Image: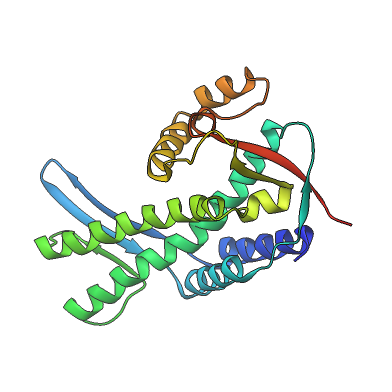
Length: 218
C-alpha cells in the first residue's frame, strides 16, 4: 500500500470517529473510599476500531532501501502522533465494549454508557482486567511491528524504521516500560534527544535500537 493511501484512510477513519462517535471511556477509580466504574463507547467507534484493526493487521508494506543520515525529531514525533491516535481508536472502543456487555449480562439491557457507583469486587476485577488489557494492546501496537522487523503505520507513512544497531537483542519488556516513562516525561526526552548527534530517544539508544530513514525501491 502506498504511504499516502494509508495516511488518507487512517485520517478519514479518525475524522469519522471524531465527528460521529461520543468518545471512549474505560476507567475504574476509587477516591476517598468511593469507587466508580465508568465505561462508554458507541456503534460508530466500535466499527471504526474494528476497521482500523483489520487495516493495521492486513496492509502490505512496500519495500524500502535504507538511506544515510538521521531521522529528524519532528518526523519521529509525527509518526508517534499518527500511531497514538490510531492505537487509541482501536483500543478505546474494543476495551469498553466488553465492560458494557458484562454490565448488560449482570444488570439488564445493554447500554452504550454505564456508570457503576457501587461495584462489586468481581466488577472491579473485570474492569481492572480490561484496563490492563488496553495498556497491553497499546504496547503491542508499538512494539510488535518493531520486534518483527516491520514498521508501525506512523513509521511507514513518514518513511523510516526502527531496527537493532547490532549491539545485542533488545529486552522488549524493559523497552516498553522505558518508552512509557519517556513519553510521560516527554519534555525531558525531547531535550535529551535534541542534544544527541543521532537525535535518538534515550530508551531506544539504551535498548540498542536506532531509527533509519528509508527510500522506496525503484
